Image (tube, rainbow, N blue to C red; front, top):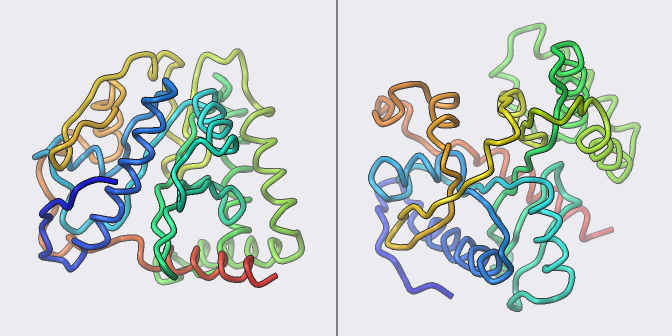
Length: 269
């Protein structure tokens, strides 16, 4: 386990971030021991790039990896070659999570997976629409204030359809779309289990060829060498400039509570 690090507690997230870093440390050790490549992702790599610290108001840590690297990681975890108190959860949501048990409040790292996607625009739209539909079917707690009338109707219909299909079946369909449909000539990749916007970012299949280390909170973690391309796509050309103070707030509380509710419901069955 990692040593205690002094984190910015301006937003009351220091304890949560410390546990997230402990979980990331264990995942990093497993990956390095077994020559598995990953890249820190999202706000995690943004904070590392800005000042080598977690963003003080960020309440999650993400990594991303190619499908073949994830399969290697999964095999290692299933073999039991990981410390007690850690496990891989592939059944609660449409994305796998590396979880550290922490009493009644588990801490987890989301794992986003790069899969192939067709070079043809229509096929791309069909794949992304299918993936989004399954995501919508699996969501339970939705902040409808974020949507206009059309969006509210679509989300409501998708949720209603999802209640007719078992969680297991939805995950099977999602995995089939990810790995077997609309792959084209395998010249392009995208994060097939990312958010509504994230799964639309399409890059050439060489994007994940090379890796380096980047410092975050006094330690080195893996990042793919072309991570700047992601930062520009996600945060714009001025990604080094923090947002206005009014926009500096945790962004995953509702989603995290939804995951915890689904997980508890699953454990009770």
